Length: 402
Ligand SMILES: *Cc1c(COP(=O)(O)O)cnc(C)c1O
Image (cartoon, rainbow, N blue to C red; front, top):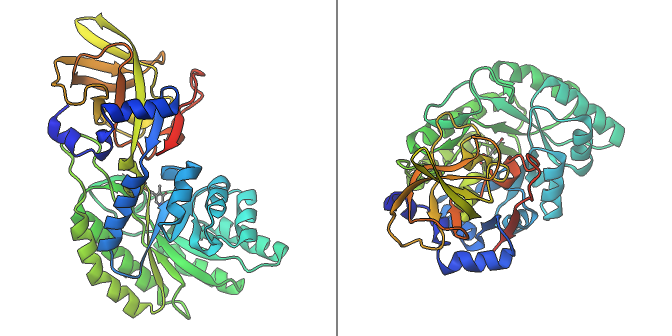
C-alpha cells in the first residue's frame, strides 16, 4: 500500500504496540475498535466550521453500537433512525423524541405505532404512511409529529450513492408534495419539517455545495404553501470519506464556507426554522479499525495468499461486496510491522469458503507470518452491522469503543 494512502487514514495509527494493546483488551480476534478521541476530534472540527445554528444529527445506521450512540448523544443535536430498534437506541441514549427523525421507505405499522406513541418525528415517504400515522394518532390520542421526506427533483453527479432524483423508493416526488400537504391539512396534522436526502459518500465539495443550495431552494418553494414555516428542515448529509487509493478527503472548509452564504437565505425565507445536517460515516467512519489475524499463508499459481480469521461475514464493505462496482482495497496494514518496508505482494483473504471473501488484492505488505495482525482502516461505519454475520456460522467479531 502506498505510504501516502496509509498516512491519510487516521485509524491506522493503531499499528505496532497499539494494535497489540487493543488485541489484549479484546481478548481475541477479529474485532472492531472505535476511537472516541477520533470521533470527538472530527465533531469538534466540524462544529468549529459550521455556521452557528446549524444542527448536527447522527445517522445511527452507520454504526449502531450502543456505546457509540451513547457517546455521540452528548455531542450531536439529534439522531436519524431507520428502524424501531434504532429508534429505541436513540431514546435509550437520552435523545428527545422531537430530536429524532425516523426515515425509511418501508415502515411497518408496529414501527409507526412506536414512533407516534413516543413523539418521534416520522418522515413520511408515502400516502400510505400518512394514513397509518394519522390513524395511529387517533388511536393513541396524540398529535403525531410528521415531516415529509422529499425526493428531490435534482440529481447530483459525483456522489457515491445516489438516493434521490428520478425514480426511487425513497421519499415523495416533488410534484406529489402539495397533495400530501393538503391531505395533512384535511386530517388536521401539523407538518413539523421537510427532509431532503440527495445522496451519500460524496467527496466532491462543489457537488455537496450545489446539492445543499438546491435543497434550500426546493424547501423554500415547498414551504410557500404552508401557513407557517416548518419547525425543522433536514438537508441531508452525503459527506464522504476516502476509502480507496487516489481518493482525497472532502474539502470541508469549502462546504462550510458556502453554508455561511446559503444558511442566512434559508432563515430569511423560513424564520424560526431549524436547519439540520444528518451525517453517518463522516462522523465515525475514519475512527474505526477492523483487526483480524493471519492464520495461514500459502502459494498457489505463483501467488501468495495470506489467510486471516476475519472476512466478509464481519466486514462486507472491505471485501468489495457492499455496493462497489469495481473491487478496490480498503487501506490495510500489517499491524505488527507498520513501519517496515513492504517486501511481498500478496492477496489477503478471509476464512470463508467463497472467492468473494477478499480483504486486499495484490497488495504490497511486509512478509506476513501466522499470528500477525491485519488492520483495516476506514472501518468505523458500515462494518459489523452491514455484514452477513451468520454466513458460515463463524464467531461474531468483538466491538470496542476505546
Ligand atoms: C444512510 C443515510 C444517511 C447516512 O449516510 P452516510 O453516508 O453514512 O452519511 C443519512 N440519511 C439518510 C436518510 C440515510 O438513509
